[in-house]
Image (cartoon, rainbow, N blue to C red; front, side):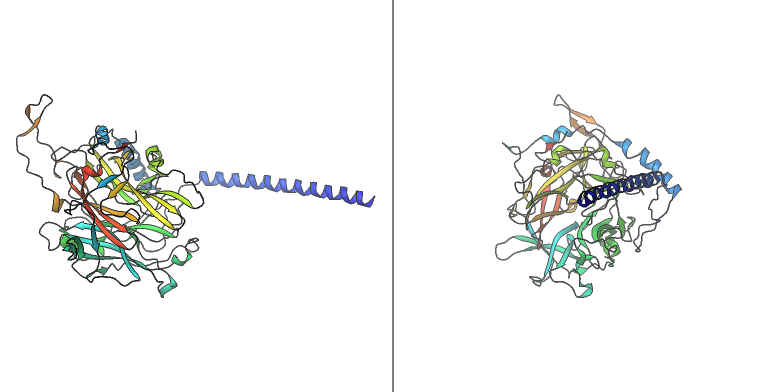
Length: 516
């Protein structure tokens, strides 16, 4: 009798506990819905800066007037300026005989008689200490008549931990570069002609408890993954990663004239504005990854700045938009890009990721003196397909072609870019692209009475094409080029060394797969 009573008592106790738990869950559900309704209805708190700067803690403000101005510009300009590209069919043409779908696009180096990749040495001596590596080069051309042809910026990483803050240290170094010939086998390489100098950029700490995977980098990371490029105005800018104010590692931009005092004079940029004289924090809509990497800038036809955050789960926003609303909802990554991220046999050990790699450039899809328009001009950048097999890493590289107007619809992509002379078994990482107009452009002066061949094969006089910065907003000497212009591509090798190739834009945009 007692055992039976005990059995029933235990059952009743269990039933009562279940009822009590249900009541708690229902109350919690109502509470969550209430909180959600409050969040959905609360006024938006936006971030804005009176000037580009990084002074530590972020300033928060409602900024109603600023928000209204941004809303008007955001609504009236980016999405309404979308243009249909008339030259899209030209992208599918291929100059390679019997080119097979999926075959790599092999790029020869125009700066080397053998067509092979050239090495870049960022030291005045023959070698660096064994615990120091300088890799991932960024190279900009000096103006004609300069003492040296190029200036280089490179990441330096120390393989040993520093005593300061017990953290890893990374930094950016610069020097002037010129060609030298290797005595052993007569190859040319770019080498520092001036003593490399470190850019003295301040250090700061990440937000507290934001570095879960990499706790040792929460203080004093330094600068990683520098990307150096010219804006359409001629500003020499650098985007880099460092300790973040909201997450572990964030992205920042700065004008390099801030840290290379005579750069403006050497580059002849005295009339070029300096909008990023202070290190400027670049953010995006949350949630932020623990480590944000490789943002790059897009410049539309009016040279407004957009920040491209991510390619696969595409994210881009107008830089002036305090809310950083994602424009990619109107131009998501197409299947031609996403299919590169195919499944692997061993899902636990093998992974494939799509990574942004370089800055962007503006290209007109014809040779000079073809007149650049919104119907024949695109933006391009290089992305990486990263293969991870346990501790081994391997990259494939693809050129991505976009509309030149917001929301920058992806139009086409290349097959794997293979740099002649590079060992595909190594980590070959594309870092930067820049136009080398100074050393390779050979544009003839356009005659006053310009003639073209019509459909019947007859010469006819036509209006002189608008191909200068004075009469065409798409044209400039820094961010824009034609198919017959030369692109200089900086390469990182095995996270240890650097390389560079020069290639015609027409070769980069050859044998493309159309995405629509």
